[in-house]
Image (tube, rainbow, N blue to C red; front, side):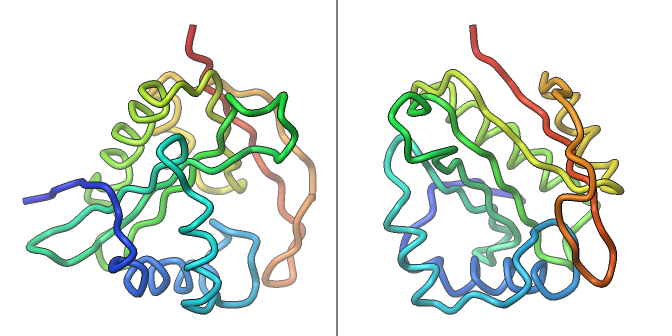
Length: 163
C-alpha cells in the first residue's frame, strides 16, 4: 500500500538515488551530473514548511518524492513555487507520480502558495496529462532551452494559480 508522508533528513540517500537515476537516464531534469549526499543536504536545508518535500513509500521503501521549491530568491516571488516529482524507475507507470502531484499541490495551497509552476520536458506526455488533470494550465513552451543526450529540448511551462 502506498503511503505519502513528509520527508526527513534520513530519507536523503533514497531521494538522492532516485534523483541521480533520473539525471543519468532521463530528460526529466536538466542536471547532467549526479548529486552528492552533501549537495542534497544543502537542498533539503533550503526547504521550509512553505517549501515541503514529500516521499512515497511502499512497505517502508521510498519509491518516489515530490517537492515545492522557491521559484526565485527575489521577494516578490515569495508566493510562487516550483514543483518537482520523481519516481523510482521500477515503480513508474503505477500512478505514484500522480498521487505525489496531488499531495504536493494540496500542500502548496495549504502553505500559502499562490502559484505553482512546473517545467516539463517535451516528450513527457504522461506528466503533462497529470498536470492537466490536476488543473494546471499550459502557459507556453520554451524552445530548445536545454541540451541533453545530444539533443536540444523544449520545455513546457504549466501553472496552477490558486484563487
